[in-house]
Image (cartoon, rainbow, N blue to C red; front, top):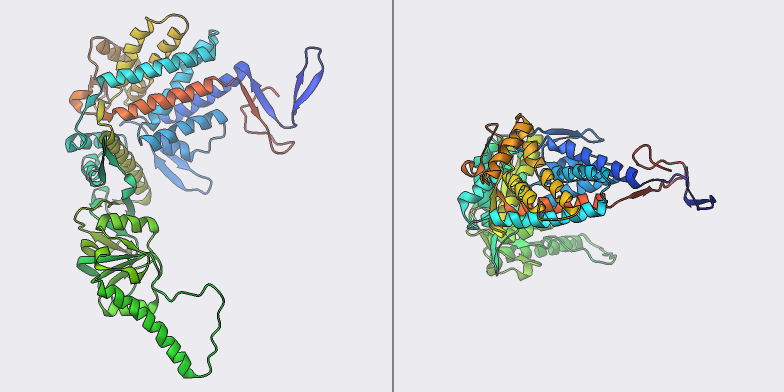
Length: 544
């Protein structure tokens, strides 16, 4: 039904069209908070090394099995507008720092749950939001105080960070071996800049192939192409490869306008064909003259050109993606040439070996053994496609956290210990504040404890006992005390070497606080439908 408002004289006014719905005031806030809390509950059981996986089935029956917060929320078709904002938190955290997506959603849900108690006590949402904002700024400064500076290229630290991230994933058993691959890959693509280092993960190509085990995954110091050598007469392996990278087709170019050729005798056909053959042969001669023995072409290669290339012993691959061509240039040190006529020996890239290998039932071309590759390939193997997809997601998170530390070399120890420390310090700081903001800061401190609380619950510990013991040890000054989920006890995470980037922790606090504040400040939700009789996706029982 349409939304009808009345004036002070009781005259009805039709404001919103037929089919629109709205909720106002406390009802709107409760509906939004309930939706956000529900999203947080869905992912909270996935937090930590003892977190459970979720099986997500989409509308066409495709299955995804994961415990990655961002992936879970991306696959769920969320309808409620406030719940969609929680999904955005996970996406933003994932794209910015790569890890901590589940933590960000759990913290945002806890902040809203604590705010609900204050709203019920007639504290205005704007005052709560301001208190949360101040608390978040203080929390980030407290994190800075306890963060430890590390050497950006310290392999030992980087491997421990990668292992910590992968401990929470399906591949926790293989984490130590995969961490070496991740660190090798990240350090291969590091570039120096004025104020530190930069890591461009776009230069790490990921190829996936079912078969073998996760431990069969390898790092190739070069590029793997899911393509075959174009001609059966070409060599399948070339050592000390001199690689020509050509962006133009090795074909006779068609004219841009329609053209007809009038032929009056068979000799003319023959000379026409010979001319085409001569042009293509000239292209091949040009490639051979440059001393290239491998040709990697972004476009097509004519059958006649393939024949001539095979005769001179050049290995050729065609229709390579543009993104792969740029990676090949970075890996081999070659230059992509727009025309065969421009090709010179200086433009050639180099690698120790170019070889076509059979992976399962497919033939792939490996360009490896590059001297100083600025682009590399991670070849992921696994028992099934679903395992490989989860390994891919896990390695992405691991690469991102290693990148975070190389670019901002500050670390903290995990297991919920930074959150517990910041929570303890915020409670002390809240006592110096006056007014209702003090209550908001105290609730923020309580919400931070939702992280160690969820870790303890997922590890099968008694959450109340765990949080009580954690608080008492933090009060005694043991700042790295957290939840040792593997052994199911409260322990010293510094001794266990569970390391996380400070950048991730800061991003979790920032994104969770901003989202919680945005949802808190909403007091009116209006949903208009396209058709007159359609009911929009709104929580039941709203004012209309």
